[in-house]
Amino acid sequence: MTNIFFCDRTNLGSSIGLDSSVDKKLTNTFKYASTLGMYSIQLCFGSMESYTRSKVKDSDIISAKKIQDRSGLHIFSHMPYLYNLCGSSKQIAWEDNKEQNNKTLAMIKSMEYELGIFAKFNTGKYKSGCVVHPGNLNKSQENKKILQKGIEAIAQTINKIKFPENSMLLLENCAGEKNKIAKNLDELVKIYELVKCKKNVGICIDTCHLYGCGEKNMNMGKVDDINNFFKEFDHKLGLDKLKLIHLNDSKEKFGSCKDRHEYIGQGFIWNENLSILSYFLDKTREIPVVLETCIDDYYVIQSL
Figure (cartoon, rainbow, N blue to C red):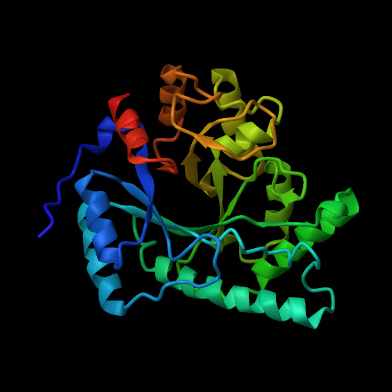
């Protein structure tokens, strides 16, 4: 039997954990996270490059829920990169293209299943949700009018989801790539304003993506910018909508518009200046944080 131990939560800057694949059963994965003293974990129900998702037995959910109750885990999943809520690179959804609309409806059904699984872990003081990249347009469609149509299509897709009780869909910011939507807080706000079931939609912020986007006064390697980010987020969306943070350093410089994760303290954001990272984590004490690199970064965070 796996020996489960728990570390003192107050020793961590926030609810830190790792991105992890599902080890055959949710129960096994939760046990693994607990043995390392984690308080947050992000899972993927299959390859990030595949539409095929694993199915979960009710007995596994019941066993995993018991571990969550004992260890205090916040549970998240990351939906495939292939999911595109605004349709596809060739066709925007909901524009009288039956083939595209059927594909988007099939994606919605898959999303509803995963949302239903993780809703069972979103109870009481423990948080849970499913992260998705909102979508992308064809690179030839880069203009404000098409961008707005993409934003509207994403919101329309979300509005067609039959959200299970307690389910939470988290929209993640991108790194500023021109054909991707949600490059900044303003684009996330535009999507959110069009969403009907707002109680079931939140935000996931990736620090590497935020750095890559290069928005003014949004450099998480600077104390003043950290303060500005939380102030702006609270003003535009409300901090209660910030449900998860992907904590990643960046291989690329500020404003590169590239999504390339680096190990904590070895990239351009913190560059061994972990005192600023400590300040950032102190600002996120009530927000689950997931590292998407490797377990070594988890130990770096624990050592701060």
